[in-house]
Image 1 (cartoon, one colour):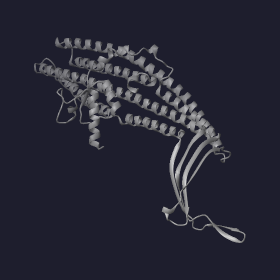
Image 2 (tube, rainbow, N blue to C red; image 1 turned 90 degrees about the horizontal axis):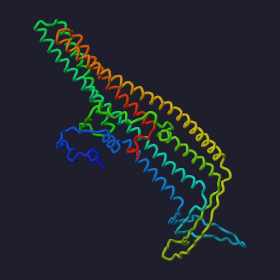
Image 3 (cartoon, helix red, strand yellow; image 1 turned 90 degrees about the vertical axis):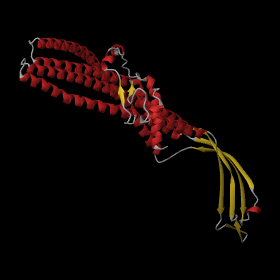
Length: 453
């Protein structure tokens, strides 16, 4: 499949996920709503699940391990082979009897037929089947962990873009207000109602906002690019996210209750992966121990043989030959290889158990830190929200004082700056809450069940 066809199929899948008509994928054919694709968080996650290369590769790994299990299961069934052989005797064996010498055998030897066999008792093989089954669980847990990490990363990138847009909007409003203040101040200066210093001060405020706006606009572009990369989406298709962080703030406290958070880490992806790996090493150790056990197998052969001193195959007489047998293999000594392999697996198993216990301890400490960050974020949101109201009230008072000549331009400028900073702090507090909650959800591992089945 060529690259263009792969991109086309990927875009069709993305269009289906977003509910976008297929013809919107063409640069010359756009949707009626316009060029920009409007995304919700749910849509962005679903597209990433379909398009992100890491997710796709993990799914292939699970499928590959399933095939490996079926391949290993085939060792339990009988095997049947068609065999054939030919040998030419260079020098025949000689025997002496009663003073005479005889040659034994023939120059040309042919044989063909069927050989079959199956294991009757094979403990290492049975253990390897359990090991392969656990390997599938390990791959599935690895894929689940990748998906949870991807959902978490997409969530953070999505709200980072939303935060960048909202911050740019606040700065743009501040810039418009500063320009309006500059226009009024210049008019008052022309009428002799204010000093040139006030005009310069107001102009400086406008110029100070411009770099922040440029930085915020660049932040939007970078956040958009990051979201596209995570979604596996081509750069030429513009996207945007609707709404604002304030919309999320209205309902976000209903999404989590700190007292109900499960700290057992039973669904944590890292813990579950370590548990599977521990069971995997346990099965590996069991299989190694079973290398000491005997094996019993059944074999059957049915062949036709022909022997001659020439190559006149039309004159050959083909004689059937068949055998059936049971083979017992009891390992006795292999230079200590099995003993040291068993010791190696025991160390690996104990090491994994120690690693799991230590990881659980660290994760619980990290979860507690994230819960504390969540509490701080909730308190910060309340504080910054109150600060916004106070700053807006102060700005209104400053405007009225300035209009009646009781206030100065510097006072008005400072009031406007306070409003801008308070709004930006409020948006950042909401974003900090979202990232802290996402960190808690990522540790718990049970918040994204709809995406990781």
